Length: 453
Figure 1 (spheres, rainbow, N blue to C red):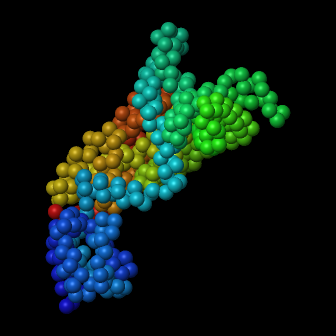
Figure 2: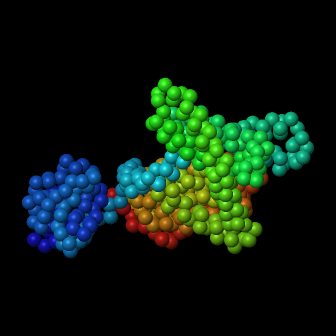
Figure 3: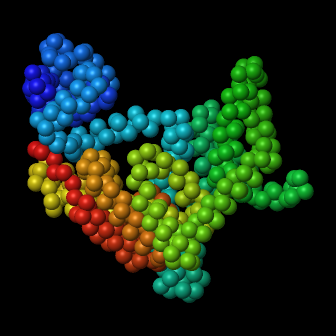
């Protein structure tokens, strides 16, 4: 039998081309992902010409042909199957599973935990952020006359509510996420690290600073406290646990904080502020634009790998220290550019299922919910994903040049307009349009292989 005949027979034995989700090969094996594995006749495949064995592993049916031979047979199988690209819900599920398996490393699990610290706070960020945004708009429109009113003061008080106790809230959540049996201990640590009376204490010849390092210091100290708590609990008799464990944990954690961790947190926080000031926030338009391009273009790959989790505390720290984050609008252009890329796909494709998936994902995408588009459209098709990344680079440059900042995090897409600082809503919308247009343009130029029905 020729390689083409072997491939034709193999396709029939695995349940036909409609039962094949994808087919690839490694050095020795032809690897199938099937719609329904029960349709594959394993025994006949084992006995088929050229087959050296069959392995069913991690949801893949792997037929062993050996080096060289497998490449030729897989190539023939692909000719029969055609360009079958998963789209819609199938693509979302399959892509997420692959990325989850690939990204399940200790480092990335740590980043996920870090992001989880802030998830319960997002509704508060949104609520207080919207209130602050209203206040900021009124400040810009009505000036000092408005600022002196009781209404302005009350609105400002409410809007800053979450930020006033942010170290305590972060401390409690961090202790929960990292496994403490005394989560309120995290809140106490957050409160002490931000106590005004720290300025009255001199250590190593220098006065301590209240709130040095912001929430970054709080997280570092809380993580240490969890390790201390677990270590102490292993050696302390149960009858003394209630007294000894909290005392030792709190005392040792805070001594380490004052001597080492708070200065480290302060250095990290200051470095983040300096980095933003000298890149996206730079007055040099070339530096600012280039920083926006790089940040916007790389954000979607960060989301794919789970690395974006590390940005949440950075946004929060910037908002707590400066009142807004310039990074969020820049990075949000990635989702906006995906909308433009999806419009380009919708215009070109003849695949009715892909058209339906694109239409269903566009409204959520415009509102800042990007999963249906990234996992259901752009990433499975390949080139539209690259088009979205390039489009985000253009949108990121526009946001950076206009110095568009957000007073809170938690929303993306068009709703982010409600959280824009200093009345720059129009500039933000220009950035949105630029992202849409650029995503559409680059995807149209790059093109893509239209999936077969």
